Length: 436
Ligand code: ADP
Ligand code: ZN
Image 1 (tube, rainbow, N blue to C red):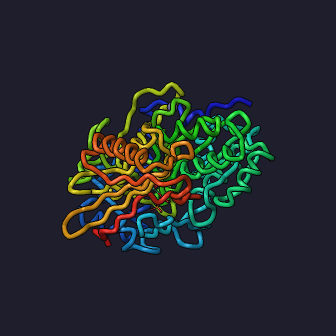
Image 2 (cartoon, helix red, strand yellow):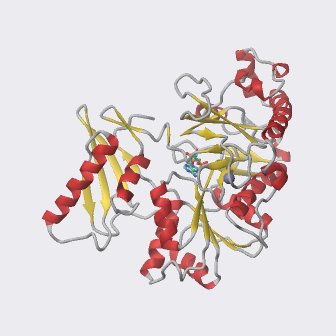
Image 3 (cartoon, rainbow, N blue to C red):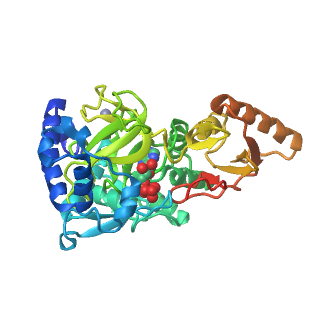
């Protein structure tokens, strides 16, 4: 059965009406937080803001920010908005950035989160005829549980493989005719590569769509995955602090992710000054959960850098779109004083015909930064002569220099020498220990 939206009324609601809902929810939420979360009440008191000062969504900038440091300080119960006996679940971050976050959910919080994931699945063309294989990790990580819940709500036959055991992933896709695959883009690339090795081309693979997120990936990587698996690949974004995957998701236009702004209010700020930036400017994404009960974060600074757009979308959804995060302010490497994002390196590699299997290694010798990139060659790029390889390395160094403005040392490696990821890929090894 063809279905375009999971919750049509809300997903296509005129902007003014969404704003009304946001205002009503914010006023209520600020009261809830002020009364129940001492940590945030103290921050508001410090700033001299009272719940009465928040009359509509236009007043949101009066509220104090929350950051990862606050989450660490308030760990584990300091930001809870409900007593533990009203909570039914916790989830926790994988600690990519080394700081574990524990988030609490009431049943209502879970319902909203799963509905958001259901919206994403329907936007990717999913309905009750689909077989949806969820190959994100299950457990504390939000990826598996979130998409699993969304898939149930849509009525797909759900295959909860979790991540790992790639042989079994392939077997289920092929034997059970999976039509939708949900996992990290790096794992999708690996599954695609493994299917190709078994001789399955895009036309042999029953998948029609993929919902990939939880880590940055480029347009080039999207095209490569789409071609190998014979699917349309959709981006999905989220973070544990705000609920999990499904905070925003892509529609058929594949040009940015609609934020579920009836639940999550987004702002873009200047990461240096904290000032709100006008639409269309790149800055740090800040989220306010408008109706989360157990872990109701207001003005949470994500560290993700992106752009918001209210340009009308051909899918009919009216919710604001965010661009793919171009990086995370804490993912950005400063090498020899130059800002470098792993996504820029990935773009160059895929443009130059390499696979997305690479690793960036940064170190410091004395006071000078070193910058190395290990890049894997495919079987047909691989050659025995040192001369051929050094010509290829030189070409890649030039392309990197044009993109980044600085010169890395490139190491072309034989096929299969960069370790594959079944979850979030580790792209960068920074040995300089510049942070804690
Ligand atoms: P952690 O990575 O710290 O363990 P999470 O698992 O909650 O915490 O990950 C949230 C972060 O993952 C986001 O803030 C963002 O940086 C990244 N992320 C999630 N989805 C995407 C996506 N589609 N594209 C790029 N980055 C993403
Ligand atoms: Zn759209």
